[in-house]
Amino acid sequence: AEETIGFALAGLSGQTWRDLEVIVVDDGSTDTTREIVERHAARDSRIRLVRSERNAGPYVARNLGASPAGGEFVTVHDADDWSHPQKLEIQIAALLNTGAVANMSGLIRVSPELHARHLWRARSRFAHSNQSSLMLRKDTLADLGGWDRVRYSADYEFVRRIVQKYGTRRVQWMSRVPLSFGL
Image (cartoon, rainbow, N blue to C red; front, side):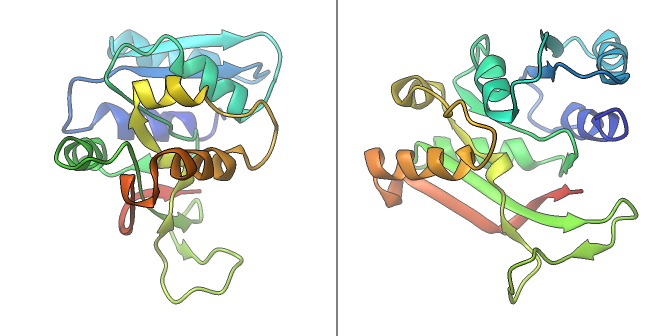
């Protein structure tokens, strides 16, 4: 993720919700991702690097990163996404002010030049539910045991598990609020 991780970390460092920790999981990268993250961490003490010696995939990495998290809420963020400065504040406020156990914001897919792209499915709008913005209470994560240790589509399965256990009304689908750009 050497080409995009700086973009992602800049978006997280600029959040209006300042009380956060950013745990970056280096999932066995062989490029300069680790060095880039270390430079960002030297400038922002809220950023911490966790290394995995071998690539195990995004969902193992999510579990590895969530494990040492000390906050009441946990969220995920892909290395090629940029977050609006109020993304975390909006998502946390929504969880604090409702009985929800989890939420997701919207995402607009863009090219590296920031030209909006539709997903491959026919849609009438550009903003889509962002599985990579899932925010949930840490006790909910512990209760469900985290993400499946598979390579693909564990986001969808995990959200379905949350809905099955807590009900649709306890998961907020904020897809009309595009708070992220995804490359």
